[in-house]
Length: 162
Image 1 (cartoon, helix red, strand yellow):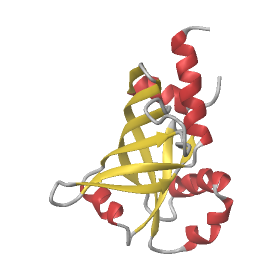
Image 2 (cartoon, helix red, strand yellow):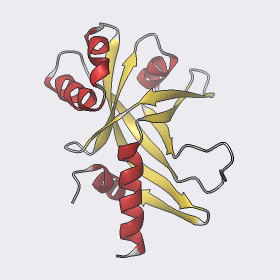
Image 3 (cartoon, helix red, strand yellow):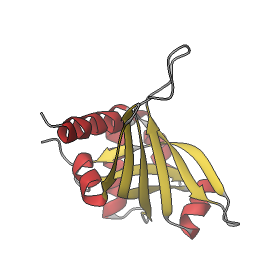
Image 4 (cartoon, one colour):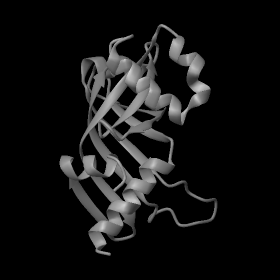
């Protein structure tokens, strides 16, 4: 198995195993804002799906500026080394779904497959689904093991398993 293939398998496993990411958006004044969001992987559309409230600061930020960044990382242990934690930083463009459209319903199905406990929240009127279309990524697979991925490479990793 090639190094590239091993890294892609590790990337796919990291993204699919974890359920939350740090979402970076831009405030109206241009300053950065980071929040924690649950996400689901949509292999059919090779993107990530989040479900956000109109009351959240990141929602207004996404409406003004759809370029975002997400960080998915292994969890640090109390006494373990942190500098080599596997992680990926994703560059994406947010596409907010209009409520009750076929696209929103498809996002809902993907999201609820991962988070069935969120069913009541999906009926709340101020929440919307967002597709995060990944344009590139930086993967760190351990200390000194890192690579950049272009949009096609990362979308292949988000797609159906081979």
